[in-house]
Structure formats: structure tokens, C-alpha cells
Length: 497
Image: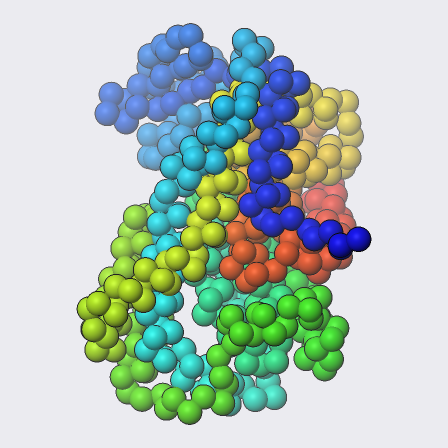
């Protein structure tokens, strides 16, 4: 009998989409009323499925709706999405998603995720151009010689830098650009592809999980909870420091084991396949000339400009994609690549990441089914009811797992914040601790599940590295268990301080 293979990322997501479509037939549909701020008219719009009402944008209006959020959080743009209004949940007419809706969902998801999909494709084209110039080969050869005997430094630096990006401005989707660049470096250092995957993805996950100044996570969640984002900051910094240290030690232990004995690699059976796909010759005879140094500098500058733009200039996917496209053109000019060759290479490079782009779209399609079936608010309503009568230590830890579960259906950190915080944060008042604990539960619950969440970024990341989801789970689950126990201890301590 032929050995069964673990399904591909696309198949896993299609199965999940089918399960979610089935849920819309089983879970009662329900909706909270929503409140949106209109900047042009300085008014609020209260909406439900049947009506929309215009309200004065005043603090009294918010208080009348039991929304304990300062008015300026809306007027200064901190909260830009419609929020759920507490105590307004009601069951609505069922909207089960049938076979046609199921088949439409990946297409709708691809359309909704067009911004990140185009970013991925343009990055693929840029990588293709870089490979053609030989700059990667020359740069990796130089780096391999420079780090000889100290390759572990690469793991520590990459994990820390990406964790810093995650905690400050939510570096997540953008990390997809790093895999094709860093994997050859790690392979040249005699590690397997799991190591760069872990350094990048785990670095991003622990950083966003322990967000300190991330506007798309801790700041918007704190605003929606009606507290200052600096409340609880010390505890999050401690979590970030210790959590990142745990992750680095975990990755280093695995990396050293693989370096000493390649057969210990979880993906040893794929060694030749991955090395032929990503492997660049660390003993390359391509000299790192002034021209290639300039090309590498332009390439690095693309990321510096992207990070600065996202963190300081409120850039998003359109601007980021433009940066990489301009970078590819400049590199083509400096590398003296003929126009026809440039176009052909760029298109082929983009094609290499087309599978990744489709995975992102299918994952977004799962969220589309949830929204169209009106079951997101139902799950939120019943989740908020679970914690009644609990002592505060148990309450905090149950909230941690509730947020982990909800993030399967709502993987967007900003979407989760505006949807859940107005409902969940008042529960802290009844239990007897600060609302920053709810913000922490939201961050840590989403962050822990992000390590394995198939509706998040992990399947797209694995598709680039050509590693199966089952192999990733085998590698990362011990770390997830360690971090979960550590987080539960930290939450309990913070609750009683």
C-alpha cells in the first residue's frame, strides 16, 4: 500500500473552508450593532443589518452606548474601523454558505488580499533579478567566510531583529520577502531550511505576540479598551525579552544538532531537493565587485525604506510594493540587464511565488465565509459568556485560550481588536483587574496560536520553503507548549500583582 502523504497547504485550507461553510449551517447567525466615526461630518454612524442612524460624535454618546473609550481615540484616527457596541448582540436570519459560496470564497479571498498578493509577486520578480546578477552568490560566499565558526550569530541576529520589527510595527506579512534571501545563507552555514524558517517566522511571531508599540495590535486594542497603550507596557517588555530568549535557545539547540549531524534534521529527506532549489555556492568564484556591492546595497535599501515607511510614514502594501518594483528596475539598470531579459526573468521570478500568493488568497477566503455567514459575532458573544463567575487568575488564562481560538476565525490583529475589545474589556471591571490584562490576553492568545494557525501566515511561509505543515508542527509544538506554560505563569503573576 502506498504511503499516504500529508496534504498540501492549498488542500488544508480548502478543507478548513469547507468546515467553516458547514459551521454556518450549524451555528446560529448573530450580529452586534456597530459604531463608525465619520471624520468629514464629525458624527458617528450606528449600524445594524436593517438600519443606520447618525449620532453626535460626543463623549455622552459613547457613554450612553456603554462604550468606555475617550472620544479623541476616534477623532485623532487611532480607531479607524467600526467597533462592536456592547450588549447589542441579537440573533439574525441564518445565512448558511452553500456549495456556490464555498467555491466563490477563494476567489473573493484573492480579490480581498490583492494588496499582499501583488507584494509577494513583485518580491518574487525582484529575487529573480537578484539571482541573475550573481550578487547573492557573491554576498553569501563572503558572509560564509566572515562567519566561519560563528554561524550561530546569524540565528541570533535574524531572530532579534525580526522580533524587534514585530513588536514595534507588526512585521509579519513583510517577512515573506526574507525567506528567499536568508535561506541560502543558512544552507551555506550547514543548517537546514527549518532554521531560517524558524528564525524569521518565530522571530516575527514572538515580536507581534509581545507587541510594545505596534499600532496594529497593542495600540489599537488599548484604544478600543479605553486605556492608554502604555498601561501594562513593563510587563509586555519583560514578556518580549524572556519570550525571545526562549525562542532563540530553542532554535539554537535544534540548529546545532543539525549542524553536527544532518540526519537529525526534521526535513532530512528533502535535503537535496531544498539545496538544489535554494542552495547557492558558498565557495562561489563570483567576486564581490563594486558593482555587486552596489546591487546588494540597493537591495538592502529597499527593506530599510520599507521599514521606515511603514513605521514612520503610514505606508501600507501599495507603497511597499512600489519600493520593491523600483528596486528591481534600479538593480536591472546597474546590472546592465537587457530589457527583454529583465522582463522574462522578472516574470519567471514572480511565477515562482504564485503558489504562495494563491495560499494567501484561499486563507482570506475562510474569513470571507465567516463574515458572510454572520457567525463571527455569535462566537464572540458566547465566548464572552464563558468567563462569568470565575476568579481572576482562572479568568485571565481562559481568556488567553478564547483569544487563541477566535484567532483561527479572525487572524487579523486589528480586526480582532476592534471586534472584541469593546465586548471583552468591560469584563475586567467585573473580575477586579485592569483592562490591560484583557489586552495582554488578546495579544498572547493570538500570538501563541499564530505559531501554528493555518488561516494565518504559516502555510504561505512554508510554501516558500517547501516544508510540509506536518514537519513544521513536529518542530514547533514543543516550543508552543513551553511558551504557553510560560505565558500562563506570567499572566497569573500580573493579575495578582
